[in-house]
Length: 242
Image (cartoon, rainbow, N blue to C red; front, top):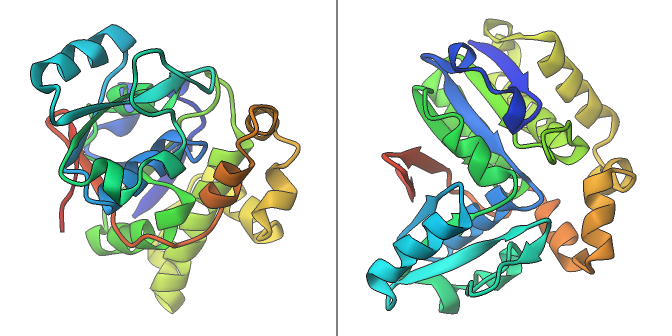
């Protein structure tokens, strides 16, 4: 099993994803929202690139379709929810379909459609994702959504955490895993900074969330392993597949 990392949605190249399992990470906050919504009973999540596309889809079934997302961290006009995972309670989403568009995360998913399989990861389901990847035993590419096409510290340390969990699962057999230089660096960064907040608090994306008063979101999104599901993207939809 070989493990690699792509640092932003803008750096995705189709040839790097062919026959690979891709893991999308946008910890602040798109993938944290997706995992939370599905864990709270949402039937499926449909990620799309553009606001207009999301609104047109939602019109097809106003009773059951919910709109969620943001641009530049701000809730979109006419949408039911922002990009705060705390919005997506069981009472709000159970039995519903979430149509979602965000600045970075949904674009990363759509740009990765040439992969063999796409999984959705965040810190809240990091260990569950590691267990899934260990069981699949296929080459993995972590795709960090990044921020406006740039490297994002928060996504990078999250994939480092998942790589560390995979090594723990393999134990003495982890020599069967080979890591690219950037994957080795991601794991090293996490191992040197297991108190994630102390590392990411200087990140531009983190500071933006603080400026928007999303302090509770930051606390939630950087809590490890509170959810044990792994969403899978297939045929334009995210669902929980055992």
